[in-house]
Figure (cartoon, rainbow, N blue to C red):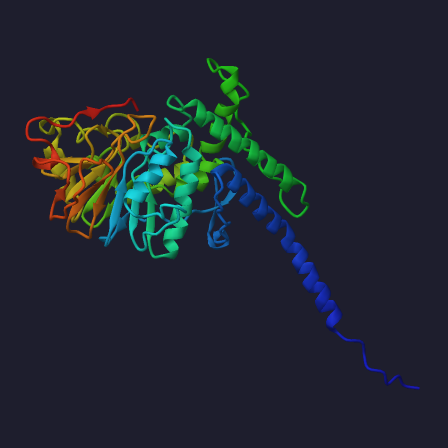
Length: 422
C-alpha cells in the first residue's frame, strides 16, 4: 500500500543553515565589541565603530612576513576648498586642540561633534610628545575624520618630526603622563587580546610586545612599562602607528597652498611629493625597515627644516622658497609648523611663507590658540583667541585683526621665534 502522506517540510535544513551562519558571525562580532570597548576605555569615552572596508583592499606582507591589507593610496593634491582651516602643532594637549577647533567653528562647543559641514581641516603634525593626551587626540581626530566625511568635509592629518621620532623609538620628549597614557593603552589592549583568545573562531591575537626589550639602560624602573608600551604601539606596523599615523601625509598641496611640517627644498620636489607620501606611509606600515627615509632626517628634512621660519624676515631664505614654489604648478605659498611663533601666526617672504605653530600646548609655551582660515584661492585670515583683537578681516592676502605691518609683523620689531628643541 502506497503512503500518500505529504513529505516532511524542507525548511528544516535551511533553518539549521541559517542558525549555523549566525553562529559563524559570533567571533567577528565579539572581536568588534572588544575593539570598540577598548577604544572607549583608552580614548576617554569615544566610540569608533569598526570599519569593514578592509576586505576590499589588496594584501601585502610586511618585513615580519605578516599578511596585511594594503592601505589605500594617499591623496597628495587637492583642488581649492571653499573653506580650509589649518592648525599647527598640538603636542599632547587635548584641551587646546578642542579650543582651536571651536575657534574655527568646526566642532559643537558642547558635544565636540563635527559641525564644519564641507570644510577641510589640515593638522600640520606634531600631535605627539610634550603632553599627556597624545592618544586621546589621535582618537579624537579620527572620530572627526569619520564625522566630517559623512557631511562632505575632510580631515587631513600630517606627520611632524615628533611622529617620525616616535615611530623610530626616539622618546626624548615624552612626558610622564605620556608614558602613563600608553601604559594604560597597553593594559587594555592586552586585556582585549586575552578576551579574543578565548574565542575558538578567531585567530590567536598577535602579541604587541613581541621583540620589545624587557628593560632599558638608563631608564628608571618606574618608566619601563611606559617605554615598552610606546615601542609596541608606535613602532612600524604597531597597533597605533598602523591605525592612525599611516593615514598621515608628509606633504600636501591644496589649491595654491603647500603644507609641510618643516619645509620643502627643490630636491624634495624633484624627488616627488607623491613618492615621499607613499614611502613614509609604507615605512609606518612596516614595509621599509626600522628607520624613516633619509629626507626625514637632518636639518634639511621635510619635517625638520627651519629655513623659512627665522624670527627675522631678512634671515629667511626667500629666494630658495621662491624657487621651490615655482617647481610646484600653481603654488603661491608654503604653510609650515615646527617652529613656534610666540606672537602668533605670521607670514614672511611677501607672505609666501606662512608659519602657524603658535606653541599652544601647555608642554610648549602655552600660547593662545590661533588657526589659519583659507577661502578658496582668495583670501586668508587668522582666527585668534586673543581677546585684544576682536575684528576679523578678509582680504586678497593674509590679514589679521592683530597688528599692522608687512607679513603681519610689527613695523619695527619682528615676532620672537621660539626654537624648542626637536
